[in-house]
Amino acid sequence: MGQLQQRLKWDPNTGAILDADRRYVMLRADVLMGLFAGLPPGQRAQALDSLQASVRAHGGASARAYRASAAAADAFLRVMAESAADLGWGVWRFESGGAAALTLAVRNSPFAMAAATRDRPVCHAITGMLEAVSALVMGEPRTFRETRCASMGAPCCVFQAQDE
Figure 1 (cartoon, rainbow, N blue to C red):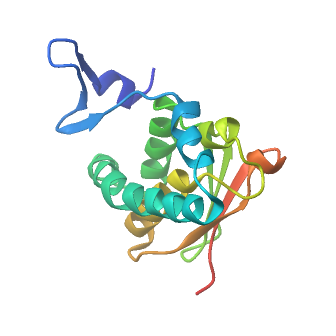
Figure 2: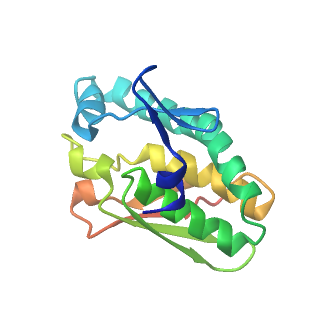
Figure 3: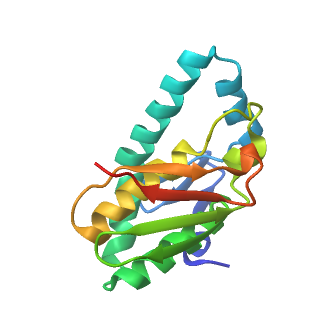
């Protein structure tokens, strides 16, 4: 059991799942991804981009809390990978190519596995969290994009910094 799983408080009296003051919600991946599949393509792209921005902003609050518990960048990345697995976000493997490069490979992304559309990358939630994480590791915000997605037949999802 990971650190996040140990910290989560399931409170049936209030119907809440909490990590300190951060509330989580359990939701089936196919329910979430079905929302996007039901939208016309232009609106789907906009909604996925909005999800990415929301995770970057709000998920970034969780990342900042986790960063406070891990002094070294490599320890923080291990905490993030473990937390992702604890939350059912797949198996994360970070690769650092020096101070300016960070790549993430994700096996078993719930977003890719539950996507009904297979024409483009769909793991925008992971991209948003990676952007929040990279800002905490590298000291400045970076834009990332999913270069390979399991929803399109790749063996895993891969996220890389986007050249500005």
